[in-house]
Length: 595
Image 1 (cartoon, rainbow, N blue to C red):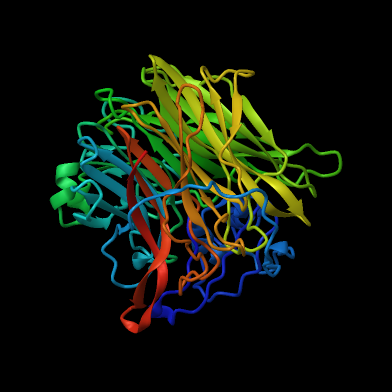
Image 2: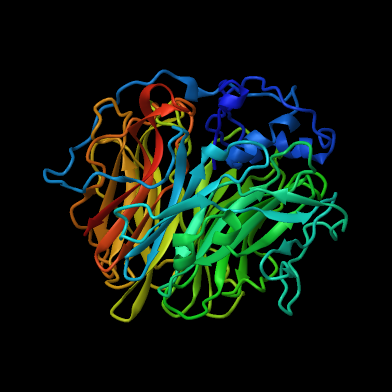
């Protein structure tokens, strides 16, 4: 999920796309863009639904700007308030372990930003692979998802490039797309194709959908590497289309390849639509690192406005074979059929989104997500939901409510301007022959005039995921706010590592640090926190994105007591396109530490 400013080719003029949620959005300046042929279709209804806009990827918000109705009401936002220092509760731990200075995990010399990081490893941690949003390719029709590999355990960058997009059938309806490298259509390999969102493909001309961020990277112990990403049309001269991609490669290929397609010889659009009233967003992915030929599970949210009044918003999972030759039809884990604008006496709308997926030691699939509930004119609440499917099964259980958050973390704190979230992330630990499910999330602990002033990260744990079996533990409560939670399980030791960003080291509550808390995977007992960033990171200093956007997530990965943190930092100084003086800018960086 990303936000942009127009690049130097367009004069590097400002594009402010702020934090949005459920009908409250920052005011946006008018942006010159070519007329779009779908402007007077159902796509307008899709774009002008504030709930949809509030959850859409920032990249998608920019791509759809030409479709916005100029008369659409933009509500005044409290997010424009001037920042102020907030009182601190408690204090930081007296002793902090810190790690070595991070590696800028990209080959960028332009000074353009990178954010939204994912990380994995193989070969006992000697080969580390990451993916991120990369604004160097922020032009219409260009691939936007960056990736890199280290063959030195994360101490240096070996190779880097962009994730390729995919060519699909253009037209007014949805259908299967060619999966380069296999010669088969999506869902091929002898099985049925994915269910189209609304009818067969046109069978006419082709169009290229570039990769558009929201990356997830996963590797097996044998060094097969998978990458998922959104893909959608950013060239307004082409018909609208949206897809979720999964690419397959291996560490040896990634270390030496020189072109996008050579690096990722197999790619699969697990779902694709050329219907302008359908959009896919917020993908996530998981594969067992240890089970041979483990299926690949991909989660995503579908926004579908093609059924009449009100959208159908669903949280879906697709299961693909390890070779990506065959994928299931989308499996709807939770769907909202209610109107986003209920009238007097109308029920609340529920938006299931932000999927997380983890695989158990036996191959069971666990899915978590946020069910965002709102009645017209009222504040949103969030249910953290979980469901599971047995090994080799696509039948998911009835959703279980892990917790309900009355004060969710969505929008900037008092002293921040970028979009902040505390939505759930899931992991499964295996200790003493027993799997345990762990979900981390953040919730506000203090609110003033609708502004979340402070937030905490909470870890929920269950042995089987059933209702009534969850226990909860606050992660390292201290002064400042903790947000952007993430969690990973060490596949060797079974130990957990819970991570978050925190403002606790900045008296003004503006700069953040990256923190990790080791947790006993069996008991949930935390160890002393690790401050991953040696000095606080200033989120407002990127010359292009400014204070408006710093990504929506980051990741930790751990193997046998060694961990890698892939996150956004603004501490490297670079000239912007070789001009002026070196200034801070957003970089995806990699820190290596033990725990």
